[in-house]
Length: 350
Image 1 (tube, rainbow, N blue to C red):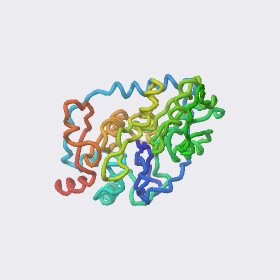
Image 2: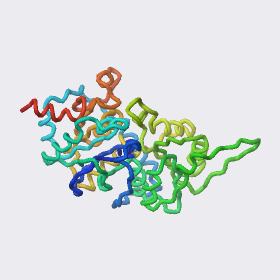
Image 3: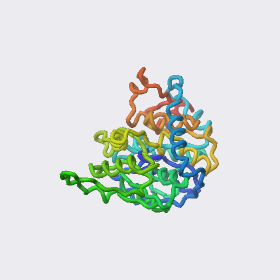
C-alpha cells in the first residue's frame, strides 16, 4: 500500500474528501470495488539531484539495517487508550482490511467507530483518488524528488499501476505489460540490445514476469552508467485469493538481485520515504500516527522507522508463534487478532 504495493495502494474511502489519512497497501484486482484507480495529482518537491541518488540509496538502506530490537509486544487490552493516544491511523490493506478477495469481518464498523472518535482515516467502500497512496506512486514520487532527468527513461518490470504513475509524473517509460509476451530466441552469437537511455529500472509485483524482462532490466542496471535499481516492495508473499498465499513482489525483485548482484532502493515499506512524504504533505506528527499492519518486516518496521506507534494484526501473514519466535527481532507496540477487536475491546473496557 505504500507495500504491495504500495500500492499497489488502495483504501476504504471517507465520506469526507478532506481527510488526510491514507491506507498504504496494494489494490487486489479481484475486488471490483477497489478497481478503476486513476493516478493522483500530487505536488512534489525536488530535494536533491539525480547525481546524488547513490548516497541517498545507501542512507535509506542503512536506516533499515540499523533497526534496534524492542521489548516484546504486548497484547492490545485497552483499545481506548491506544485510540486516544494518536490522531491518525495508517492501515495496510492486504491482511488487515481484506484477505485475498474477501473483506475482513467488522472492518466498516471499526472504521466508522474510529471516525466518530475524530481520527484521521478513510471509510466506506468506494475508492477515492485522494485516499490512495500506492507503492507504484512511491516510485514515481521518489524519481520526482531526486530530479530524475526528463531525458532519461524508466524500464518497468510491473503492471499498469506503475506506468500510470510514471506518466502522470511526466517520465518516459518502456516495458511493463507490453513485454509480458516477448521471448528471446537464442542463436549462436546472439546479442540482446537494450536502450542506453534507461536511467532507472523499477521492479514491482508482476504476474507476467519472464526471462525477457529479467535480461532487459539486468542489462540496463549493469551496463547503463548510474542506472537506478528501484523496488516498490520486497513482500515475500501476497494474498491474491483467500485460499492460499501467493508469491509476492519480493520474488520479482529477488531475480534482479541475483542477476545484478546489487541491492535495490526500496521506496515502499519499510523505507521511510512515504512516511516522510505523508507527514510533510498533511502536517501530521509522526508520534501521533499508529501504523496498523500484518507484516513485521514491512508494515511494523515501516512504522517504527518512522517513529510511529505500531499495531500488528494476526489476520494476515503473521501468526502469534511467528511474532513470539526467538528468531524474530521486530516487535510492535501491540498486537491483536484483527482490527475489529477495537470494537470488542472498547466494549469490554466500558
